[in-house]
Length: 391
Ligand SMILES: Cc1cc2nc3c(=O)[nH]c(=O)nc-3n(C[C@H](O)[C@H](O)[C@H](O)COP(=O)(O)OP(=O)(O)OC[C@H]3O[C@@H](n4cnc5c(N)ncnc54)[C@H](O)[C@@H]3O)c2cc1C
Image 1 (spheres, helix red, strand yellow):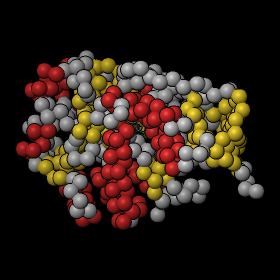
Image 2 (cartoon, helix red, strand yellow):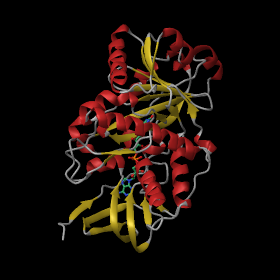
Image 3 (spheres, rainbow, N blue to C red):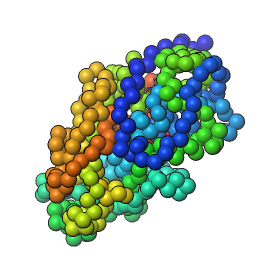
Image 4 (cartoon, rainbow, N blue to C red):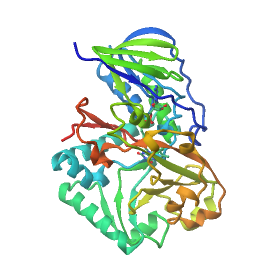
């Protein structure tokens, strides 16, 4: 019999709900209670946990599957992010260095399939509010152009699939705030989405397919060996398979804490500014700029500007605290870098949008290396889910 591994889970504090999660009427799912035997128990109802449940159920409808979520549906990072679904074309150089050329191309093409899958799902859930791309990766100074050029050269070298287009100042001005970008790459398959509505759509779809979903059902302990014995605050589960999809909280667990890091990301939203957008950003297409840390902007359906920054801090000993979720007004603190690309919105009142922690995905953190316990690594994010083997 395999040696058992015991994992104690950290407490999950419930943070203020994001702007996105406060829109519309959320579905409600019962808290887990009692004892059960299942085929698959999934910890975490973010994109990763829910896509896993849905795809497993579609492939093997006879499986009894439960997703156990410590907070409410869409309260975690999947329901509080920027909602930019970029795909993997912009990550080709990173992917190539981590996994080799063929695997990099496979992942990028799989990313396009993910985008199509998200679009297909969203057709039945209009509140997901998909806004078509292209998404731009843009340079606003000559010194940023090298980043654009090298990324585009990698795309051209590895793939000639038409999934990325180089754009000069004139085209960029039609899509993004005019007159400030000198070079860029356009990703036509990318789009933006209401991220919390996507989580809800996934949860509703999974429940319709027969997956059990439980909110406010935190896992306290899992004993993994020949199957999994799972202890929850209100009950216990014996499952043949256990899927760990707890996002940033994974980095706190004993096996992962020296292999993963988590970092904070922040987004903020302005009040609706349709008049200003008509003048200063008529194209309203999303973009991020070519600085080392990611800074991105998009326009929401209700005509707000959303600025996001992934330049947040790594946490001390991977702890996740309430300060990771604090409100950052547009143009101050960590919202500031994005504001340089659209200073016009500085005078707008800003509201809380969302913030949180994510782990560095494998594509962004080459120090992961292969995991001895996992033969597959999953990249979640709003891009959809891609599974691939580490080189
Ligand atoms: C502010 C911000 C902006 C971002 N912007 C973008 C973007 O524009 N595009 C993009 O692609 N990505 C973006 N990201 C990253 C993206 O949100 C994450 O990569 C993605 O949501 C991770 O999904 P996940 O399912 O792995 O984890 P999560 O969404 O973190 O889900 C994990 C879930 O596990 C639950 N959980 C934890 N511990 C337990 C336990 N013991 N028992 C039960 N449940 C537990 C948590 O409550 C949580 O709901 C952003 C992230 C943030 C924070």
